[in-house]
Length: 447
Image (cartoon, rainbow, N blue to C red; front, side, top):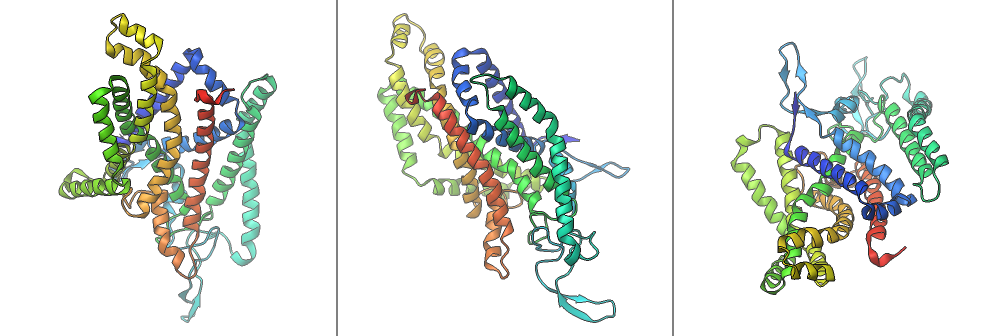
């Protein structure tokens, strides 16, 4: 039984808009020219390959359904996703509490009752991690190496078909062709890493478990969707305001320009964190008064995520609005715009046909550069408890939960390390790709 949340619908609409943009670029030579420069950048294509992997994970985690249970086909209250099915062993194999990465024993000692009735203070065996080993102290290292080698082989087998195609394209491509070799190498690393994680994850908790025994690798992968949605859906609220107000201020000037400048100057004078905190408190108050509208924890968490995206968008449009206003002030003085006004062309048509298309490069540069800062903003806001719902998997919630874990003895470090690793591997490619897009579309940065 499929089900769609509000954020899922907006996410798929955004993907459709992106597909439409790709079609539009393919039909327009002026738009294809800068994208060829992006495609010729080794760092940009390597980064895009990594970003596409994250995108696939987010799409799998956005296709939801209610699984049937038993002959009566009763449904669970909380929906599952395709990613949950794919990661079923990681999702269902929970321990009692903390365990270190690739461990076979719990992280803290307990009083263990022996078969003869006596008690011993020792590290208990994990219920799932390394449970197949008769003697973990002797066999664990060899088993990890064996399974890691098998995972490398499986990853290589998965890579062979697309890798062979990319290598063939590399040999056939001439000057100016995309760096197919670099893309193939990146895909190889991803496949090998995925193969090792998949093989080890069948018998171990690769990144350990948290306080309630949940697999940290599972939490990290489930947090990918949250990070991507924060970085992309925020544009739904940012772009309409920034485009409309920026173009109106720059084109009409006068009292319209003064009013819009007063609006975003006033908004900028208030600390953004305070605005976000106040808006989130209002949203939480609404949710508390209308509990009947939220039938499950998943619906509640999704509503809060959507509200956070809208709030971030409504508080972060001012920078792009300034840029669009300044560019529109320049464009309105261009000869073709003045000629259109002299011929009596309607102002709405001038804005749509002559002003808006020439602002595309600024919008694209701003969106790509802001993506990374929005992903990091979620982590910061969740850390101070005004971000996504605590029940939703996110890197910010993982970092927030690691505050106390880092202070205990022995220190539990792997939740923080996992969140940092996955966030870093998303933000760094996003920044590199954004730099390539800026260099290609910014007219001040010539060839």
